[in-house]
Image 1 (cartoon, rainbow, N blue to C red):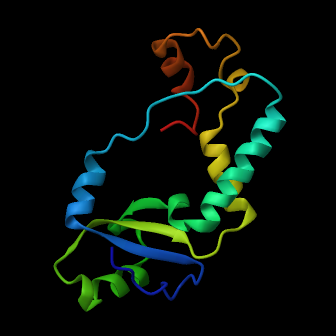
Image 2 (image 1 turned 180 degrees about the horizontal axis):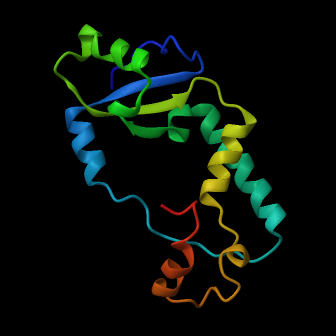
Length: 145
């Protein structure tokens, strides 16, 4: 994957256009659709997960990124990408956007997007719940895509 310079409007964000082949593969990907249940102190689980997520993000910032349509990228950044001769005719319709440096809020955002407290979704949701019950309980939670 070829990288572009940090966009001029925000020095902490890196925008990497996906190549046409990457864009096609990403579009076909439905993501991970699994759930794990844990027993014990939720604060311990949260702190343990946060510590590990921090290690991963510090080594690989792009994992905390998001894929956005090129059309949703700020005008100045889009122009910068489209005028880069290295990308001429090779880029797809999406861009990977991630922070150049990881802040505590980035770590919290990732942890909060993957850790769902079961009693905050539906008090009836249990380890023995069926997949259909889990899906129904999660459908109104903004953290579930």
